[in-house]
Amino acid sequence: MPERRRILRANLVFLAAVLGSIFLAFQAGAQTASQPANQKQPAERMHYRPDRFAGRAGKYYALVWGVDSLSLKYAESGEIIRFSYRILDPSKARTLNDKKLEPSLIDPAAGVKLVIPSLEKVGQLRQSSTPEAGKSYWMAFSNKGRLVKRGHRVDVVIGSFRAQGLEVD
Image 1 (cartoon, rainbow, N blue to C red):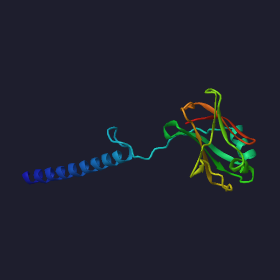
Image 2: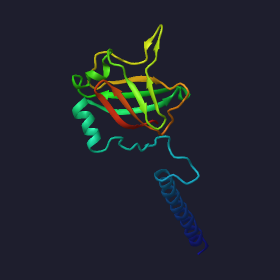
Image 3: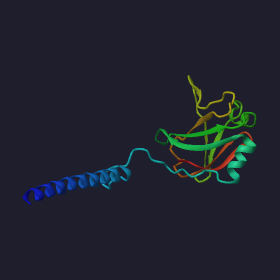
Image 4: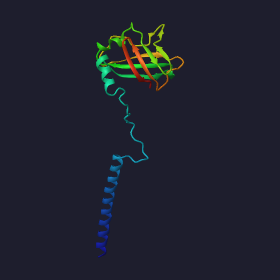
């Protein structure tokens, strides 16, 4: 009988070890599937960016002017406002890259009209090459005195092209 008890005890220890390892395996799998609260999530994050021109406005710029992804960035500590856009149709977007036209940024709230500065050795701070589909282009408006601020709604005018109500980021 004592030998039977020893065998039974050995079997119970073995069974406890097997069940314990299964429990630990499930717990480890659950931790990798859903990170515990004290551990940081991976660096991969999705940033929500709303569509700047939902509905008709986005379609208008794409169909009439052949551009999309219009944006204004507050750059160089506010001394420059950078206007960028992507070309969809080069023939329609030719006006935006025309060297002869003088672009301007109008801020009705601040009551100012910004222009593109022309530097001696560099020239105008804008891209004016022949537009190509799928490429992004930019131009930089001088914001001396920092009158145009982040969040202001402004208009960009280049010849007959006029983008109204763009928000400065």
